Length: 465
Image 1 (cartoon, helix red, strand yellow):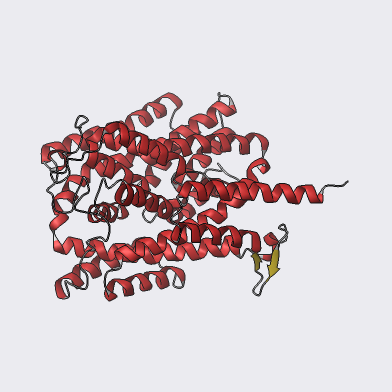
Image 2 (cartoon, helix red, strand yellow):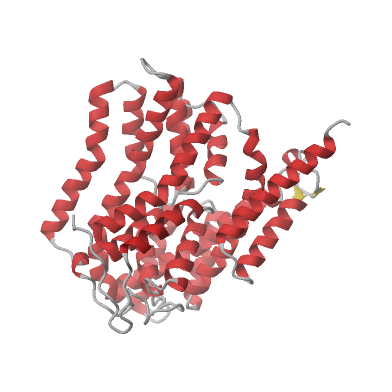
């Protein structure tokens, strides 16, 4: 892999991105990347494209389109791609690790609380406010990304079809992506203007990495480089896991987690939700790592912490090893299980980017590929909108049985109720992000504080005198 080095400065402005500035940004992003992939991508777009102008809008969308096709968390892979584009392999490693590390450490602590104490009521109030913030962030992200990606009526129709397919017909996300890609290839040949890739509405000419510049030296593909990256990536991925299996034996819970989650990392197309059913079935029915219903608790924790939603696998790894520890302290086994699942889940992501990104950079000017990728992006907009609707329905209009625990709810039809507090917080967050250009940090912190204050007030009012 290449040694660290900055991207060449923009000849028009003389600007370049210092590695120190990038490091501090990726570190900050690791603490604020709430909201799932849509919220995380929105934050990166706002910071990298609009505010800092490190990468042009078209280059950002091109990288995003590629990451959408890969197994694994696309937002983290996008961070690896941008970090690699700016500062070679070291930049990609720093971006990808810092994107996950804060959330992973927090998820480890929450998994320990859940496993040892059985519940996490002390943070339930904060999570209550955070859920409303996540809804606002995802809704704003769907509109922002859609306004940039849907540059024609044909692409808008693709987004609408994707929304209907996943929302009403239950079409799996990978099939939507494949269908959109094939449609883009065919449509780009027949109607090239209708399926043309978005050129971006954001800054481009004054970005450090511009639309029209050729790929930097480290981003030019070669067979020798590709073979070296493939060999090194496989060793880095499977070396530690193979050593673990040799130490603990193939039947140990840690070894089983290493193998299972490495396989799961290969099929996580479409984000965490697409693979959760597969993981839940294996964890509960096949291996007995979780009890029925515990995956929901883990998903709730992952939804409310920074980092990719697939960090829920860390929760599964901790509880599975904690429950089935052999010859190890349960907490130590849980920590090792957490580390194993995290490594098996995220190590392949770096391999996909370092191996494939140079070839994607070479194909950046290919109109046929660009049409296919732009159509995939349009389909993803529809899927994001569907996610926003699902999250909004669950958070803002919960089932009446759940809403009964809250103070300000209004009964609705179909067994649902309107949570007025969550509606107020989500509406304020959405309007602040969309109209007032609030950052994600104040929205997240403000919503968490509001949820905590609200629950404390309710507890004080309900306490006997």
